[in-house]
Length: 419
Image: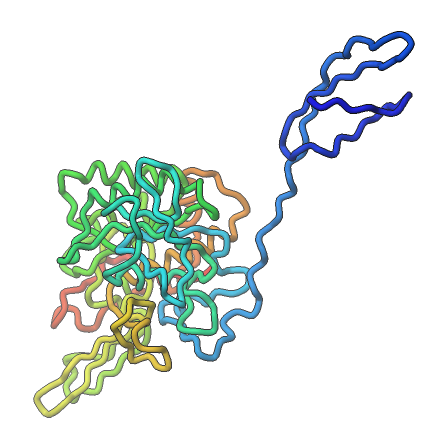
C-alpha cells in the first residue's frame, strides 16, 4: 500500500485515490525523529460505496406524433404505447428466422454473435453459432416490427417500441421448416445469457409450432420449463390449422407458455347478393386460427375479410394481413409507406408478437422481479384481467360449417389489452 503522512495530532484521514465497491486496509504508526518509529497499529478495513445508479433516461413523451407513421391493427386493438407504457428496459428475444438489422424502423441489440459454448454476445444464430443473425426469410423481421418497431416518425409503431429486441435465429430452411434441435440451441443461449445482457431478456416470442407426440417433446418441455422457472415469459402462436386443437401443438400446449389465438382486426365487407358469406366483424376468430383449451388470450392475426361479388355467378374473397416490417422486395397496400420495407401477412404468428409487446409493457410496470415462475404467472394474470370482451370474444366465425372448419371451444378468452 502507498505510505502517506497525516498531520500531527490528526484524528481523520482522507484517501482520494480509492475506487468504488472496493475494500482497503489501513494501519498507522507514529513517526518520531527523536524516538524512532512506533510499530504499526492493527489493520482497519474500509469498504467504499458503490457508484450511484444512474436511472435510464425516461421515455420521450411526444410519442406517436409522426404524421407519416401507421399503427398496425393489432397494436391499435391492444392499445397504443405511451410515455409510461412502451416496454422500455425490457429485453425481448425473437426466436425466429432472424431480424433485418438494417431496417430503418427496427433497433435491435447489435448483431454481435454469441457462440453457444460461451456466454457472450447479443445475438445468436443456432444454424451456425458465431455468425450473423441477419434474417434472410422475413418472418422474424415481420414479427419484430409488431413487437418493437420504433417511434421515429417513419413507417409503423410496434406494441412496445422502447423494448430491446434480441435476435435468436433458428431457421427456416428452404421449405420453411424450423428444426427442434435448433430451437433447443436457441433456448440454451437465452438461458445462459438472459441476465448477462442489458436490458435483461424477460420475454421470448416463438411464432411457430409443430405436432405434439414427437420423440423430442420431453426435451422441448424441459427447456420451456427452465425459461419459466427463470421468470422468462414465453409467448407463442396457437397455430394456423382450424382442424386441430392447441393441445395437439408444441410449444403451444405447454402450460408454462402464453398461447395466443388469432382474430380479425376490423369489420369486413359483404357485398354479395346471396347470404352464404355474412359480414365478418372485428374481433371474430380468424378463420384459420387453431383454438382449444390452453389459449391464454387472443390478438389480431388478420386485418380484414371481405367478400365482393364480381358478377352474377362469382363472389370472391379478399383477405388482408396485418402490417409490419419486412425484408426488401415486397410491397403493401398501406400507403404512404415505402415499398420494400413493409408488408401485410396473415397468421397467428403475427398475433403472438402483439401480446409479447403487451407482456413487455406489463413487466415494465412491475416494481420488482422474483426471478422465478411467479413473474410469468403475474403477467398471465394481468393479460387475462386486462383482456377485452372476455366471455364474448373471439366471436364465432360466421362461415363456420361452410367454407371453413373453425369452431369455438366454448372458451372466449377476450382480446389482449395494454396495461
